[in-house]
Image 1: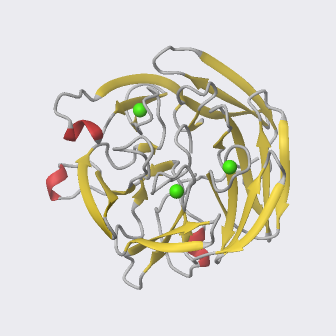
Image 2: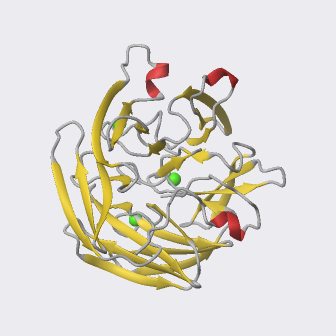
Length: 345
Ligand SMILES: [Ca+2]
Ligand SMILES: [Ca+2]
Ligand SMILES: [Ca+2]
C-alpha cells in the first residue's frame, strides 16, 4: 500500500510544464479560500506564464465567473500559503520561497491581500504585500489551520531536529502580529507523530479549533491520530484500508464547524473520492470521470463545504451531504485552496 505525497501538484504535468514544488491544495475552520468575504469560496487557479510567473485567477463555481486577482505573484516551484492571515473572513494569497540574501537561511513567506473599497460609484482595490522569514528548507510548513480558534490562520513548522517525533512549532497570529505591535505571536512547540513515517495534516473535530493530526499506517490499515495543542486532548480514528496512491486526507467543514475527511486517489482516467466522518464511517464515495486535482471550499449553497475535482478547465463540484454533482467549466491552470502543506528542499 502506497500513499502519494501531497507536496507536489500533479496538475503541473498536465500543463506540460515542469514544476517541482508547487504545493498541493487542500480548509479548516475558515472555509476554503474566500477572497471577497461573502461566505462562499472562490477557487484560485494559478496560470503559469512561459517564464514561470503565476497569474492568480479566481473562479467562482457558483456563478461561473472568473476574475483576475493578481496578474503576477509567485512562480512555479514556490509553495502555497493561502490563509486568512490578517482578517477572519478574508483570505490572503501567499507563496513560500527558498531563502534569499536577506532571510539568513530561512524560508521567505510572502502574502498579498486585495482590499476593495467603494466610494460612491468608484471601486478602489488596494493590494498590500507582507513578508516574513520562518523555517528552513527540508522542514514541513503547514498553513491554513487555526489552532487557537481566533479565526486567524496560524503558521506551523515541523522542525527537522531532536527525537524521532515531529516537533510542531506553532506561531499563532503570525502575520497579524507584525501590524499590531501590542499583539504577541503565540509560540509553542509540541512533539507529535513519528517523523518520516506518519503523514502530518490537521482537522477540526469540535467546531472550535483545528487539531494537529497524523495519518499512520499499520499492517495495511490506517488510523488518524490527533491532538489539540492547547488543551492536550487526544483522539484516534480507525480509517481502515485506503486505495493505492491515496492522497493524505483533506478536512471538509460541516455546518456545525466540525470536519469530515476527504480521501482521494487518481486511478487511470478517474478520481476516486471517499468521505469519512470522524467515527471512521464512509458517508459518501464516488468516481469522477477525470484524472483531476481535489480542492475543498464552500462552493455552493448546499450544506457544508463542497469538493471540487478539476482538470484542464473542467470542474465537478460535489456536495457529499446532498450527493449533488454539478459540472462547470473554468480557467485552465493549477487549482488551489486554503490547506497547504509544503516541503521545499
Ligand atoms: Ca467569496
Ligand atoms: Ca488562529
Ligand atoms: Ca456549501
